[in-house]
Picture 1 (cartoon, one colour):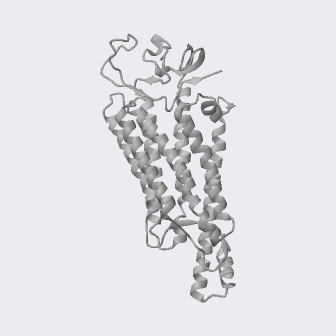
Picture 2 (picture 1 turned 180 degrees about the vertical axis):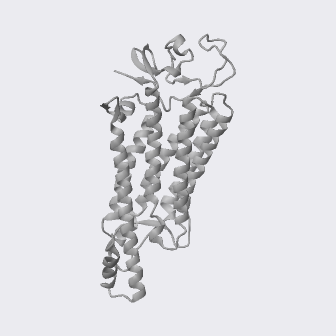
Picture 3 (picture 1 turned 135 degrees about the vertical axis):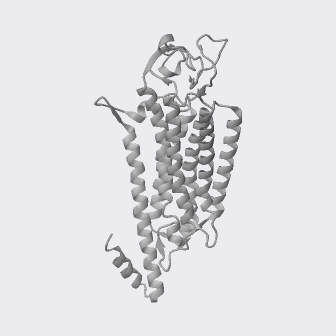
Length: 361
């Protein structure tokens, strides 16, 4: 990297332009090289995290982590969202990496530059949908949360589509006829900054709802509550910080540097969101599970249900929920028509969206 400045200066000088133009070209070449290296490093992190999550280790025994808790579980909405965010995300990032590193004419890039935002927006929306389902489950699957969060997701989708179609602008390299295909805001406009601020607003609202729910609980020390809150806050703080940084960079006068952190935001969001799903499912298994026979959404199936999913705990042993969801009482509550719930003054939270009833073979 130390000799790239001289290489860029020599390449720019070979074009025969004046001194000011030569310096501008050399700077553009340098920033493009940084973008290519930066995005390649971010892509390697996404691939590394995927490979690292394929297997896990417990008591010196290596097992297929993602295969065990995702692929080998029953099909649910959260499973579909996880697979979409993880695997479509890798494909979308690979496509953008190709655009950033291959050589295209200006006319070719005029059509291809729309793919960058149009492909990556669905990775962002997959992460947002997982966060919305976590929040909806944590708040007890109430109808108003489903309607409100769904409406916000639809609004965010519409805005990201608008940015992908209307807001992005092709970055034309000076003088050279072929080069990488990149995109950013149109000169003098700051529409694409909303591409990064819209997820921040949605994440902030979900975090607010989660914290509001925690303040109304008595069992705040529950391990399940701690997982939801601590991991959710960590996700929000890190992702929001990077997205805000991206939005700030969109106000840079140099178009070549505006999108330099785009892959950082996209990949951190994808990696952390997938980790949110995997960590909670792994915690459910590590917390102790036992098997039970009976109908769990389908007849004659065998499943494993975490011990803390049953209000009776060790006293009552496993009980059949009879539903496709697992009701986890974060606080005691009164159920006069059900003797298995013996305490009062509390709430229950559905978390099947994160820790499904695992259906075995």
